[in-house]
Amino acid sequence: MGEAFLGYHLPQIDGNSCGSTAGSAPLAPSLVEEEAEEEQKDIKPPAAAPPQPEPAEPPQLREEQSLKSLRSIVSVGQPTKKYTAFEELGRGGFGAVHNALDASTGQQVAIKKMSLQEGMSEELAVNEILAMRDNRNANIVTFLDSYLVDGELWLAMEFMDGGTLSDVLRAVYLEEGQVGAVSRECLQGLHFLHYRQVIHRDVKSSNILVGLDGSVKLADFGLCAQLSPERSKRSSRVGTPSWMVPEVVRGEAYGPKVDIWSLGIVGLEIVEGEAPYQREARLRVLELIERNGPPKLQNPRHHSPLLRDFLRCCLQADEDRRWSAQELLQVRKSKAAQRPHPFVTSGHPASSLAALILSAKQVQEEWTGDTCA
Image (cartoon, rainbow, N blue to C red; front, side, top):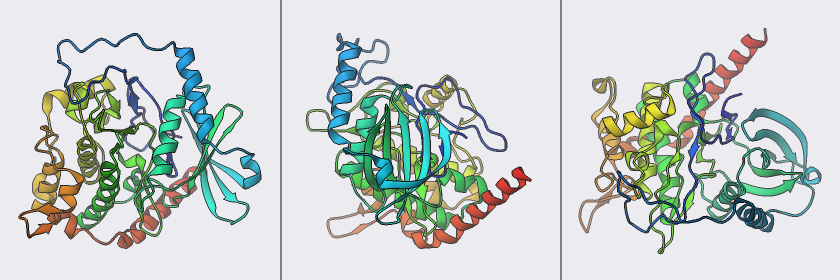
């Protein structure tokens, strides 16, 4: 399986290039560089001579502290008594994802099992649990429970039966009204996170889950960052190359608007079939982003002015000119009038995505049947 399967992404860190799968665009592993303690509040490090990190804690001590933090937030007990009928859905870089049933309610759940011995940082695990647990919203995948089991982190969450947006894009084509619906649902999730000072930092189609009821939810919070008054910016290079914003590529300080750029890239991904430079090696992608600036639609005349303007608002190289989630959802034209971006307004209701997602699911099942025949 690739980096994402049936709606649940197992993060891959610092890959050298994009992998490839037969019959689909290359998959893009996430990139993480350890966040140094010297990241300064609201200060952009000079491009020619980035600041050198101060002596860090011994790795063993830091790992022990992270593991202690992880143990303090997971549940105590045996998850195999709470969840039954485990069925592996797929396997990735850090473990596997299973479908299971809650024994007491019969509810279908997804359980992501991540091996802490195979490079999965305890810090990332803590990040993901806290971000999902503390930020409940209709457009964010619901956290259910977490456990430590024999060196693995088990993360239980709601099962999204439509898979990932990436799965959908490989099977069907979205009309502009459907693109608007997906964009609006994602923006609602991002606005909620940004209001709570959380940056997702890895928005892409494989981290957007969908349901057969048309629901659209953000997922995979392993790379998220919690801001604070003392630390209102970050500067580490984190994310997936093709979806990275220029200021992240350059190692400059950044805030929540990095997620809006990534959402703009998702828009391009939807209408073009893949993200810009997705087939290039990682370092080449970073070079192209810094050199070329905002990517363009290949055939802009094939798309409406509303879509083109929405993408332009998201894909501003200058962070100050890039719109925020709040501005895209509700633009203040005067003290008396507010309205969202017209492309968001023109989007179909989320429920209208149900038939599309079901169709994509059926196409995928046909492909699986053809493969097994």
